[in-house]
Image 1: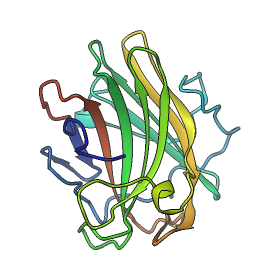
Image 2: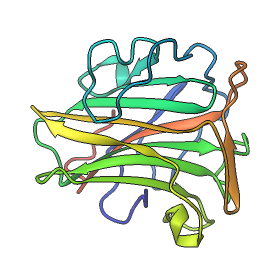
Image 3: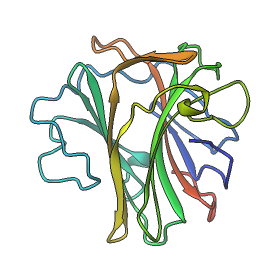
Amino acid sequence: MRLGRRGTAVGVLALAALLAPAPTPAHDPGGFALQAAVLTTAAPTLDGVMQPGEWASATTTTFDGNVDNGQFWIMHDGTDVYVAFRRLEPAPGTTNRFQLYFDNGHNGALTTGDDSWSLGVTVPGGSVEVVDSYYNGAFGNPPDSVDGGTTDTNGSATYTAGAFVAEFKHPRCTADISHDVCIPINGAPVGVTFYFIRFPDEGGFTL
């Protein structure tokens, strides 16, 4: 995700604190662990349609305590991390995206190599874009593929019936280009910030 290329983030949610929109990603370095979200059923079908029971094993949290504002689900099977996000969007922008941005260094600051995964859908048309990107020391967050890396995120997103839905997975541990991320499964926290981003910005409200 190249934040700031078009429009601005509509809202930013750090897991432990609600933050106002910011020009660059912010981090909560002690706010997230996978301990309580082990995949205990069959892996979900990553088609952007949340079927009944698919995410029953996941840990779930809402933006601002309101499922209409956005709700995400996270679980893992030891190898991959599975993520779903749903938000009611009666009047969507041309592009709607959900992104996870990791504080790889656990230092609460933007550091070259900090990893990010995102999934978005365009409206109308429904074309889907999956992006693995990283902070390169300048505002922009280029995709890994720009510097010879690989896209490790896999999934799909849809916009139907006034709702944006994203479902995707990413390896729990990766080493790519000059950055890497490894999310613990033993309860140790890792800094992660969750974003819903709509382009163009149609009002700048905070989730």
